[in-house]
Length: 114
Length: 116
Image (cartoon, rainbow over all chains, first blue to last red; front, side, top):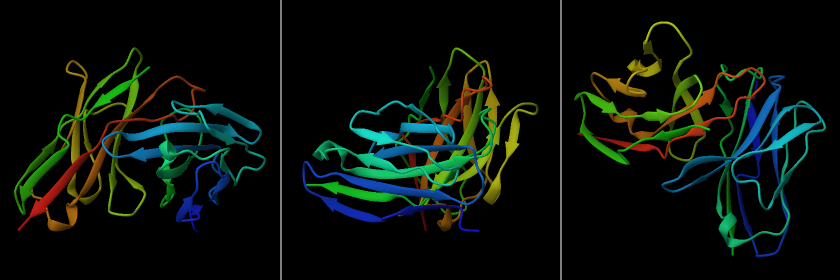
């Protein structure tokens, strides 16, 4: 049971490039989300999904795009990378929609934009 | 909307000493409360959670937290820390509205450094 798997673990991009951060979970969780972690700011929600085909914006969605075609996968796309998007990105999943369930986190993707 | 305040960005403590990490929250609706721990270069792991019922919640690794509704606080405590407890600790809340999803609002984190 792998839990939440994020790839790649590290990535360096140039300003203006695009890329997709991958996230997969094998726990049949309905809810998946993406956070970014910046020093002194904790984790901030980028986008989330309550099930296949349903996505919504979080606190800091600008510059990012998501889709949820299957229960297992929730990729995060950077459309045109900017230095302000240098961060550590975490994907998380949980069972159910009611807020009671703890979230399971991946190990993160460390992204640098030059 | 909710907000979470962790006033202490760093807490140094000697091994075997007690520790308290403070968390205060603000919300217009009832919330669920969580503490997560992050070890270096890893994702977050759940330490404990408060959903309802007893205000004293026990978690893994000997940690516990007390929910105080009147003070809107959820402080984390451990009576005797170990070197292996060195990590960053995050307090988080989610609202109790059914169908609202599991969106978490995090505090800015407290770095616990346990010294010999």
